[in-house]
Image (cartoon, rainbow, N blue to C red; front, side):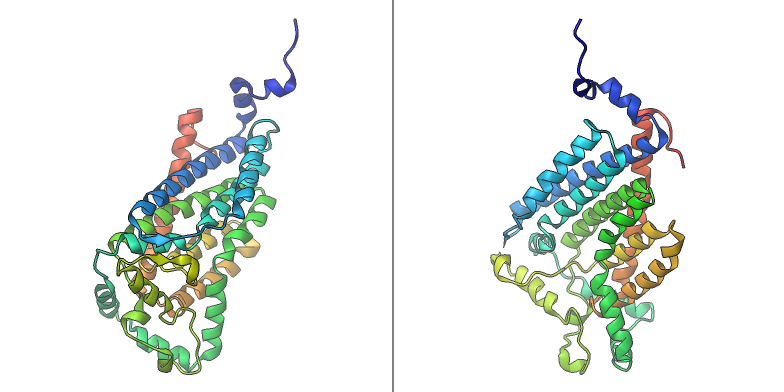
Length: 332
């Protein structure tokens, strides 16, 4: 009787189950499955926005070969040559590439889709005032401390890079499960933030207060009302051609930069050498989010709530998937 080749045996489900039947492999596989599912849901949501938004977008087609190669290799290292560590790293790359395929264009789709809903900046500003926070007072204080203003600008602009930096560090120290939970939490947060932004649009403190560069001489801010101009254009209902406009992040409430800050600090928390540097860096990101991102204080508080809830949800989803697939809770 002719024996089956090793290549064929790799695709027998029972054989895969046996090789996945270790605590480390289960953790990585289950968290990767959750991430892939959330990624699919996110892009299904974005796809729906195309039907209700009045925005012309030209995606970065050069990313498609990278996305295709990452998908094929991820499948390869999940089946033919089982290496959950490599598969997890490739899955992270795939999620990043999918997430940046449309890039900041998602925000434009959201503001166009939610054009019929009123801006809520007046309410957000009133909440800030009730909490004792005055955005203009903060602006003038940083005007007297230009070095701190520049420092917060650098950290604010570099905040998104932390997610890319997390890839090599978490993979090298064997925390692949935490890496994929980070990606899952990011995807959950993106869905929440985008849905809220449709029904509760805002232009930010700078635009709401009607400020100009003359109100902060000698200090350059990252936003300076540019996003407010584009948001107001999107709200007219006219076709917005993003291919001929500078693309920037538009989401205001909740603050996604705050989500990035908290989730990035969480991702590095178990690495003692990076724990407190990550906390300090992301505290600066939070301050920069208020100043350079033109956010109301309540925007960042809402962003913090989204970040914490999405991390909790990612961990709970992974645990639920673990029980469903293996009938037991994951090993802590």
